[in-house]
Image (tube, rainbow, N blue to C red; front, side):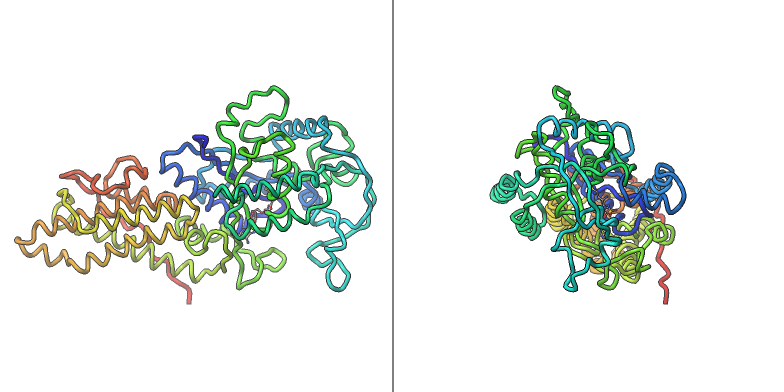
Length: 515
Ligand code: MSP
């Protein structure tokens, strides 16, 4: 296993503003990356934007601006939003960059030189919106191409094709051998079968070019300047071009190899065919070995009352508005706790408000505040280092959290951490420190309670740091604990004898819910 944990997200199309689905995927990858850092691993987290292609060219045309100007404007919306959501990516993949273009051209040239492409004429129905030729199986029961394909035109043109089909048996074998080795190519499991079925049906090759007469906003084929490359060939390559890859024979790949292979976090709509088929075969054709194939972590979708979120339906949720209104902690917490990785979920403002108020404001916020206030009132904020009846419970939940995060089950991980919070709040009620404080004979017991709560909060702050990084840090500041936030430090007993706690400051202001 390489020492670097390399994680990527899908790169978002820059033909429109970001919505909550884009934000979820980025925050999910961010939480996973932050957890790996907590575990002491070197992390390379790459995200970015998909800036070429027909949709972008069309959107720019509609606005009457150059594509470059258009994508710069949309890209800045993503950049600003990711800042507000505290994404901790190490690199930014913007596909108009020269580094990316020349890397993709190197890949194209090499595959061309090695005979992986051929030129051929195809005539048929072409979906302008999906940027692909349609076959008979795309026709609906009424014999027509459905509205999801947008405008469909009959065209005949010469293009370059990538020999996909001849890699079919290899890909089937790869899928099976990875499953047998207990290291499935696709997570969650039920997506493996879905991909396998699609690969079994693979027959055709992939058109990897677009004539410039139709599309100019793309990366030019190095061996034929009358064409640009297909947007998926361009976009998928970001995962290696921005990680130090170079397809030219003899290039120094040591930095790249120290990172690769990646965990690709993607939505369920882009598993088949782009990531599960095109990307795997592209890598193989470039000489990547089976051991160098990445893993696909496929998340589900956020829907609105069971329906797909879309601009045209007017039901798309703007994360910018949510962050302005509720703050990034509420948005991150909701997106990570109200969906199970791999499954779909329904987006609900009411649930966002309820969960924030119940779990962050009431449970966690109150626990922090009452702990620090009681310690201040009864002990001037100074702790004695005591044994605790909760130590074993906290350790058990910390282990459960770590196991869940390591298998990308962020929701389950949050649940484990929040169980500590719930247990601590119950413990306050059971022990009633306000009564203990009145009885000098209970002095040790009071110290035990205050130490237990403070030490639990210190550990909770570490566990919550991948989820709500800013607030987790604020908890540590209030506890006046300057130690390193790492899983190694999430063991019972790090607050020393005589530790002076900080001042209580309300952390999660309640959301006034709308009637
Ligand atoms: N540009 C391509 C990906 C190229 S990757 C080399 C693309 N862009 S996208 O903007 O349409 O989608 C970006 C990501 O957001 C995808 O992984 C997609 O699944 C995800 N989501 C889009 N809508 C979503 C929801 N409603 N819910 C969750 N994720 C969704 O595809």
